[in-house]
Amino acid sequence: MRVGKIIFGATAAVLIGLAALPAQASSLLDYVGQCVPFARAASGIQIYGDAWTWWDQAEGRYKRGYEPRVGAVMAFAKQSRLPLGHVAVVSRIVDARVLMLTHANWSRQNGERGHAEQDVTVYDVSRDGDWSSVKVWYRDNDGLGSTVYTVNGFIYPTGKARAAPELTSKQPDYVGALIDAYR
Image 1 (spheres, rainbow, N blue to C red):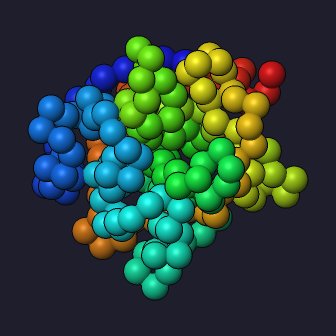
Image 2: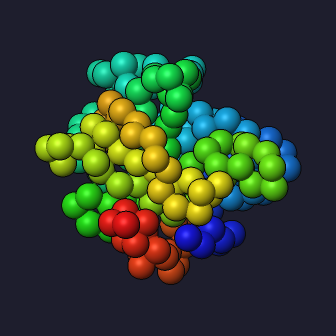
């Protein structure tokens, strides 16, 4: 899987989102830190607090659902491997069971966590194809991790919320995404 640094023109919403990131992050893809501020800046969804609280906090403020959409936040449930949950932004939909996320603080890069990753493969392994259980590409394994994660659903940007143009590269690795998902 290829993770690149692609910088497109920034909209006002993205500039506002970048202002919330540390000063050294001139681009979303330069970000190093927790998943929550990254997802907030990348999606425009203004929810605060631990990732596991986003799903409930979104009720009545943002539309929620179970179908992936580009720019939506995938809200991972609190679980033993994710005691604070996790949030990531949908960057591409590859097929009915495979999509790509852009997120932060998942895989290690140069021995440390927190880095942003662009167009990461996610595979729906739920029995009913409803995105309630997924496997996520993990850089340390150079493929899909073996852990199955529970997902609450997707939070959709509304109103002024705008997804960052850096969510996806111009040429994501679709072949790699499909190979990872189906091996």
